[in-house]
Image 1 (cartoon, helix red, strand yellow):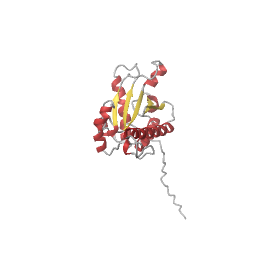
Image 2 (tube, one colour):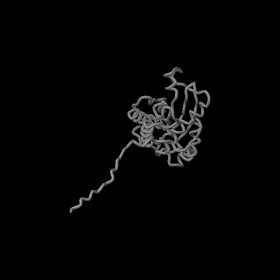
Image 3 (spheres, helix red, strand yellow):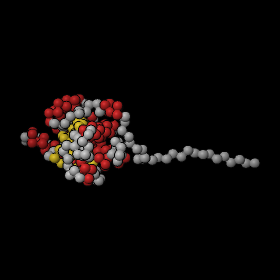
Image 4 (cartoon, helix red, strand yellow):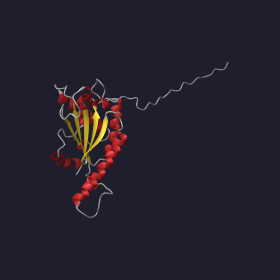
Amino acid sequence: MKFIKFVILPIVIICTGCMQYHSPARHTWSQYLRGASFTDMTETARIAKRPVFLGSGGKLITSIDSPAAAEYGDKVQNDTAISVNYMANLEYELYDALRKPGISVQRAGTDVVVILVRDAIMELNVGDISADGADTLKTISKILKKYDATFLEIAGYTDAMASAGASALSLDMAQRVGVYLSQHGINTTRMFIVGRGATRPIAAQDDIGRLTNRRVEIRLVPAR
Protein backbone atom coordinates (compact mmCIF):
# COMPACT_ATOMS: atom_id res chain seq x y z
CA MET A 1 0.00 0.00 0.00
CA LYS A 2 1.32 3.39 -0.91
CA PHE A 3 1.04 6.31 1.47
CA ILE A 4 0.85 9.86 0.20
CA LYS A 5 2.42 12.43 2.46
CA PHE A 6 0.90 15.86 2.53
CA VAL A 7 3.15 18.68 3.54
CA ILE A 8 1.38 21.71 4.87
CA LEU A 9 3.39 24.83 4.26
CA PRO A 10 2.81 27.94 6.34
CA ILE A 11 1.12 30.74 4.51
CA VAL A 12 2.64 34.13 5.09
CA ILE A 13 0.39 37.05 4.36
CA ILE A 14 2.14 40.34 3.89
CA CYS A 15 -0.15 43.22 4.57
CA THR A 16 1.24 46.67 4.18
CA GLY A 17 -0.67 49.41 5.93
CA CYS A 18 -2.67 46.93 8.06
CA MET A 19 -0.95 47.84 11.31
CA GLN A 20 -2.70 50.67 13.10
CA TYR A 21 -0.29 53.21 14.54
CA HIS A 22 -0.62 53.99 18.23
CA SER A 23 1.22 56.71 20.08
CA PRO A 24 3.62 55.27 22.67
CA ALA A 25 2.73 55.48 26.36
CA ARG A 26 2.55 59.05 27.57
CA HIS A 27 5.23 58.58 30.21
CA THR A 28 7.74 57.84 27.41
CA TRP A 29 7.04 61.00 25.41
CA SER A 30 9.80 62.94 27.12
CA GLN A 31 12.30 60.41 25.75
CA TYR A 32 11.07 60.84 22.18
CA LEU A 33 10.92 64.64 22.53
CA ARG A 34 14.28 65.12 24.24
CA GLY A 35 15.83 68.21 22.65
CA ALA A 36 12.52 69.80 21.65
CA SER A 37 11.60 73.21 23.08
CA PHE A 38 8.16 73.75 24.61
CA THR A 39 7.85 77.41 23.75
CA ASP A 40 6.85 79.67 20.87
CA MET A 41 9.30 79.64 17.98
CA THR A 42 10.37 83.28 18.17
CA GLU A 43 13.50 84.58 16.48
CA THR A 44 15.16 84.90 19.89
CA ALA A 45 14.28 81.28 20.73
CA ARG A 46 15.70 80.07 17.41
CA ILE A 47 18.97 81.96 17.95
CA ALA A 48 19.28 80.49 21.45
CA LYS A 49 18.59 77.00 20.11
CA ARG A 50 20.98 77.20 17.16
CA PRO A 51 24.12 75.90 18.98
CA VAL A 52 22.20 72.84 20.20
CA PHE A 53 20.75 72.31 16.73
CA LEU A 54 24.17 72.51 15.08
CA GLY A 55 25.71 70.30 17.75
CA SER A 56 23.18 67.56 16.97
CA GLY A 57 24.07 67.52 13.28
CA GLY A 58 21.76 70.27 12.10
CA LYS A 59 22.76 72.65 9.33
CA LEU A 60 22.01 76.23 8.41
CA ILE A 61 20.29 77.14 5.19
CA THR A 62 23.34 79.17 4.09
CA SER A 63 25.29 75.91 3.86
CA ILE A 64 22.93 74.57 1.20
CA ASP A 65 24.17 74.45 -2.38
CA SER A 66 21.59 76.43 -4.28
CA PRO A 67 21.36 77.87 -7.80
CA ALA A 68 20.21 81.07 -6.12
CA ALA A 69 23.61 81.49 -4.47
CA ALA A 70 26.08 83.91 -6.00
CA GLU A 71 29.78 84.51 -5.51
CA TYR A 72 29.35 88.24 -5.63
CA GLY A 73 26.94 90.88 -4.41
CA ASP A 74 25.51 91.64 -1.00
CA LYS A 75 25.72 88.67 1.40
CA VAL A 76 22.37 89.43 3.04
CA GLN A 77 20.64 89.56 -0.35
CA ASN A 78 22.31 86.34 -1.44
CA ASP A 79 21.32 84.56 1.78
CA THR A 80 17.75 85.78 1.38
CA ALA A 81 17.66 84.51 -2.21
CA ILE A 82 18.86 81.10 -1.04
CA SER A 83 16.17 80.99 1.66
CA VAL A 84 13.39 82.01 -0.71
CA ASN A 85 14.40 79.40 -3.28
CA TYR A 86 14.82 76.66 -0.67
CA MET A 87 11.48 77.33 1.03
CA ALA A 88 9.66 77.63 -2.30
CA ASN A 89 10.87 74.16 -3.26
CA LEU A 90 9.81 72.85 0.14
CA GLU A 91 6.34 74.37 -0.29
CA TYR A 92 5.89 72.82 -3.74
CA GLU A 93 6.86 69.35 -2.53
CA LEU A 94 4.54 69.52 0.47
CA TYR A 95 1.69 70.86 -1.65
CA ASP A 96 2.05 68.13 -4.26
CA ALA A 97 2.28 65.37 -1.64
CA LEU A 98 -0.54 66.51 0.65
CA ARG A 99 -3.56 66.93 -1.59
CA LYS A 100 -6.02 65.53 0.93
CA PRO A 101 -9.21 66.84 2.57
CA GLY A 102 -8.53 68.75 5.78
CA ILE A 103 -4.90 69.49 4.90
CA SER A 104 -3.49 72.67 3.39
CA VAL A 105 -0.06 74.17 2.71
CA GLN A 106 0.42 77.93 2.84
CA ARG A 107 3.21 80.49 2.53
CA ALA A 108 3.81 83.31 4.99
CA GLY A 109 6.82 85.24 3.74
CA THR A 110 9.67 82.74 3.66
CA ASP A 111 7.83 80.50 6.15
CA VAL A 112 5.77 77.48 5.09
CA VAL A 113 2.75 76.43 7.18
CA VAL A 114 1.09 73.00 6.99
CA ILE A 115 -2.42 73.03 8.50
CA LEU A 116 -3.71 69.63 9.64
CA VAL A 117 -7.36 69.62 10.72
CA ARG A 118 -7.75 67.29 13.69
CA ASP A 119 -10.23 64.93 12.03
CA ALA A 120 -7.85 64.49 9.09
CA ILE A 121 -5.05 63.08 11.25
CA MET A 122 -6.62 61.73 14.43
CA GLU A 123 -9.27 59.21 15.43
CA LEU A 124 -12.78 60.63 15.66
CA ASN A 125 -13.46 60.12 19.36
CA VAL A 126 -10.04 58.95 20.54
CA GLY A 127 -6.98 61.03 21.33
CA ASP A 128 -4.65 59.19 18.98
CA ILE A 129 -3.36 59.43 15.43
CA SER A 130 -5.48 57.65 12.82
CA ALA A 131 -4.25 55.38 10.03
CA ASP A 132 -4.75 58.19 7.50
CA GLY A 133 -3.02 60.60 9.86
CA ALA A 134 -0.03 58.30 10.20
CA ASP A 135 0.21 58.05 6.42
CA THR A 136 0.10 61.85 6.13
CA LEU A 137 2.72 62.38 8.85
CA LYS A 138 4.96 59.76 7.28
CA THR A 139 4.86 61.73 4.02
CA ILE A 140 5.66 64.94 5.89
CA SER A 141 8.53 63.23 7.70
CA LYS A 142 10.15 62.16 4.43
CA ILE A 143 10.01 65.71 3.07
CA LEU A 144 11.26 67.26 6.32
CA LYS A 145 14.25 64.92 6.32
CA LYS A 146 15.09 66.16 2.82
CA TYR A 147 14.65 69.83 3.77
CA ASP A 148 16.46 69.59 7.07
CA ALA A 149 17.84 73.15 7.20
CA THR A 150 14.64 74.29 8.88
CA PHE A 151 13.21 74.74 12.34
CA LEU A 152 9.62 73.66 12.89
CA GLU A 153 6.96 74.77 15.31
CA ILE A 154 4.22 72.23 16.03
CA ALA A 155 1.23 74.09 17.48
CA GLY A 156 -2.04 72.52 18.59
CA TYR A 157 -5.37 74.37 18.65
CA THR A 158 -8.89 73.59 19.87
CA ASP A 159 -12.21 75.27 19.12
CA ALA A 160 -13.91 77.78 21.40
CA MET A 161 -16.21 75.12 22.88
CA ALA A 162 -13.30 73.39 24.60
CA SER A 163 -12.85 76.04 27.28
CA ALA A 164 -11.99 73.62 30.09
CA GLY A 165 -8.62 72.01 29.52
CA ALA A 166 -8.27 73.54 26.05
CA SER A 167 -4.57 74.23 26.51
CA ALA A 168 -3.89 70.64 27.64
CA LEU A 169 -5.91 69.19 24.74
CA SER A 170 -4.12 71.30 22.17
CA LEU A 171 -0.70 70.47 23.65
CA ASP A 172 -1.61 66.76 23.59
CA MET A 173 -2.26 66.94 19.83
CA ALA A 174 0.97 68.82 19.18
CA GLN A 175 3.02 66.40 21.27
CA ARG A 176 1.55 63.35 19.51
CA VAL A 177 2.58 64.80 16.16
CA GLY A 178 6.03 65.61 17.55
CA VAL A 179 6.47 62.09 18.89
CA TYR A 180 5.49 60.60 15.51
CA LEU A 181 7.96 62.83 13.65
CA SER A 182 10.67 61.93 16.16
CA GLN A 183 9.96 58.22 15.67
CA HIS A 184 10.39 58.75 11.92
CA GLY A 185 13.79 60.37 12.00
CA ILE A 186 13.14 64.09 12.50
CA ASN A 187 15.80 65.76 14.68
CA THR A 188 13.98 66.95 17.81
CA THR A 189 16.35 69.90 18.27
CA ARG A 190 14.55 71.42 15.27
CA MET A 191 11.23 71.33 17.14
CA PHE A 192 9.24 73.87 19.10
CA ILE A 193 6.03 72.39 20.53
CA VAL A 194 3.15 74.45 21.94
CA GLY A 195 -0.53 74.14 22.77
CA ARG A 196 -2.46 77.35 22.16
CA GLY A 197 -5.97 76.27 23.12
CA ALA A 198 -8.76 78.17 21.38
CA THR A 199 -6.62 81.16 20.40
CA ARG A 200 -6.09 82.20 16.78
CA PRO A 201 -9.21 80.68 15.18
CA ILE A 202 -9.05 80.42 11.38
CA ALA A 203 -12.77 79.82 10.81
CA ALA A 204 -16.13 80.87 12.25
CA GLN A 205 -17.24 79.30 15.52
CA ASP A 206 -20.19 77.49 13.94
CA ASP A 207 -20.46 73.72 13.58
CA ILE A 208 -18.31 73.54 10.45
CA GLY A 209 -15.87 76.21 11.54
CA ARG A 210 -15.18 74.50 14.85
CA LEU A 211 -14.04 71.39 13.01
CA THR A 212 -11.49 73.53 11.15
CA ASN A 213 -10.29 75.32 14.27
CA ARG A 214 -9.40 71.98 15.88
CA ARG A 215 -6.06 71.55 14.20
CA VAL A 216 -2.31 71.17 14.34
CA GLU A 217 -0.13 73.64 12.46
CA ILE A 218 3.46 72.85 11.48
CA ARG A 219 5.29 76.09 10.70
CA LEU A 220 8.64 75.72 8.94
CA VAL A 221 11.27 78.45 9.12
CA PRO A 222 14.70 78.50 7.46
CA ALA A 223 17.50 77.77 9.94
CA ARG A 224 19.96 80.71 9.87
